[in-house]
Length: 110
Length: 113
Image (tube, chains in turn orange, yellow):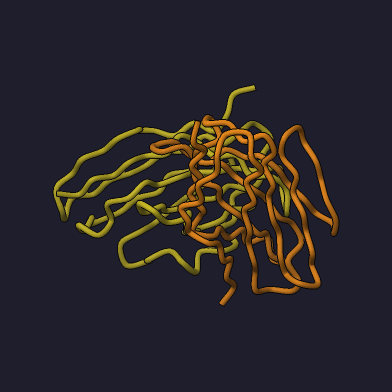
């Protein structure tokens, strides 16, 4: 069974702090990794994609991938109250089957 | 560029009735996904299409669910008959192809009473 695991949270950080979201996956042949943000009552919105080991930065967001440890993370710097949402980790396996974790709920307190 | 379009946005039906959801993917996107999302959970894959071919429908409850993607563009997901446990949000997503970013439509919130 291919699984994507996330800490469901809630994760609470003060405004301006760094929020760290983590995800582990079970299949070593996974190829592509994605982070989605989902506001309550809305559909998932793509934030970041990462395909190779290391860090990828986009504005306040940094995705980190470690394939040897089967681990992918998302860092949000200078967290804002508008970042309060559920963050979904998605993994695309070698048969192109994209699976999602249950999501981590993040609250940024002013 | 238009995003993924789904309709209807909301649907309330009585149990045992049929229901259908429609999805129009982003133009040029060959891969189309249908997901189901329950409250507090991540999206769960129901079926994936590559053009008009269903290449992964292992999670689709085939006794009551069916899907089609005629001409490799629009897709329809049907439930017949609906059960109370089918109440959820049904999400459609599309991508250019294998291992690329998927973009979601607004979803259809189904309530079965």
